[in-house]
Image (cartoon, rainbow, N blue to C red; front, side):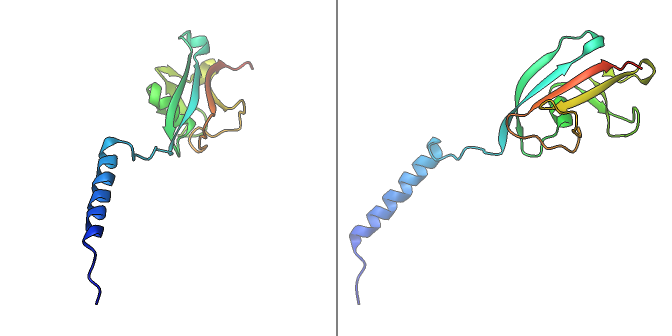
Length: 134
């Protein structure tokens, strides 16, 4: 029967302490790959508030509605047709009587759902408060 070598025990302990040191020193941290950058633009148009353009970090699953809510207080509500519509951003409310609405675009496309569309790295979300011409 073979006896274990006494030399092997020292290397295992040394490796354990080396890994422990790396873990607590930050060298062994794994970067968070769930977060990514997107750009938010908000144009208050006729409300005459300053426009905003800001790059923000978001996590997977973020939506245009959630992005604007990270910067400004916002509310949902049935302005026209859907109770999930963004009704107010930073105190500026959609006003059907004056034909003023919040619209959103993603990378220039208006075919976007504010609460369903999932953002991707590098996306540009633009919210605009506009008066529609009849």
